[in-house]
Image (tube, rainbow, N blue to C red; front, side):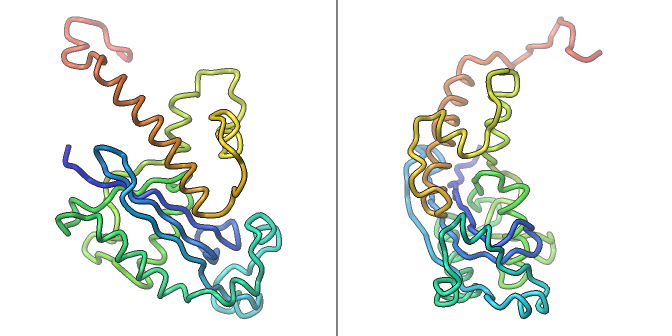
Length: 226
């Protein structure tokens, strides 16, 4: 496999619908694809439309009070933050630093908790607006268009047969891994916690793979599905 770096990232938003929600914070940590050591960090608040009527008129979701309570961000703080376009362009430049051949094939792999169903959806929407975007492939170019690491799916694969596991949300994972919940729902802290869990599990994957018998494992034997 070619060496690609990993960008673990997270949005905090003013709503729950990834197709319309307004991002209010974005954070990311770049990891070396082989050593899994931290190589860089990005974090910024993002200005959103705080007037609900104007947000709706623009086709955006209004800021939900429940979401603001969870993140601890006030409308005043959000209104004073840098514009979405400026933050997104800086984030694109940040990601490009870890595409060491500056080609789509070596773009960093996106990582996060529930990024497939949430964060990556927002990313696609913002890349269509501000770039980087490939019209040919109809997809963003800041991340690998093939690979992604969703920690929620990763944890499901490890725990789905364990009847003792009742939840794999981030609060439950923090408790099980013995991590502090202080700072939860701050994008940078969420990214750090997600990255630490991902690194622990990926190292476990690598250790298991060394002793995994795959070559010719079905040769002369019955398949699971006939």
